[in-house]
Image 1 (cartoon, rainbow, N blue to C red):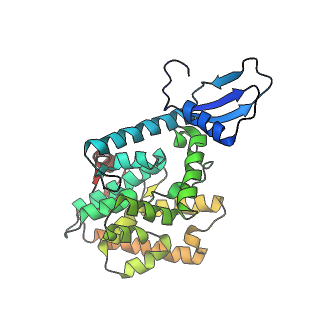
Image 2: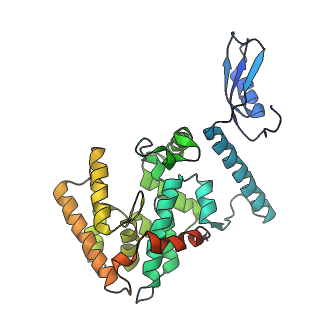
Length: 305
């Protein structure tokens, strides 16, 4: 390999001039050289030709492998066995599960909204459970993500190619249902049944049922999600309008419901907002990008136990 390139940094392609090795031998070459693809090309002048160009996708994959190696080293230093749980910050969890930066920012903003509400609520709340639910509620969402829907900065670092490969791996491991994937990831992380129950109920079509219920933890978690669009914290009504336009442009219904039902559900969400802030020392408009910004950096260090 080229000087300075570590074996754990994957390379794109190795060309071989002639020969037809077995699949087992090809797999061995790929593993030893850490190359993604081996092809045969009679037109090259040397017997072998290794492409050492590091694309953004390859660089991102190499950094991920390095992170996973460091994580394994940390587990060993703690004396943990393969099945033992290791508490991790949400930042490390996002890296381990390769969460897209845009999705990572969304969940952090949702958790920051929930944190502001919890800190200003007039009744006791299990804040840690609510924050944990908000930080994990969309972990499997890359499965349903349209990777052509946003500008390229949404997919940095790595670029669309890298995240498409991550998407394929998620589907291969967890299936086509992003919500089931999220629940399975939470089970892998060993979070409490109560947190899983909250996330399992964060669904647009459940808003009216939640309005009529008495689970304030669920109401706050769901409402916080309804305050964050792809670009930041907005009002509840702005978020509903944005979702309507975005889903309409993709020719799909929100939550699998028609327009009349959508209006009814939006109204139920408005009632939930009133229920929450009737017991809160702040108003909905006090929650915005400026007020949540200081919370996001600290939330990156939030430990999932």
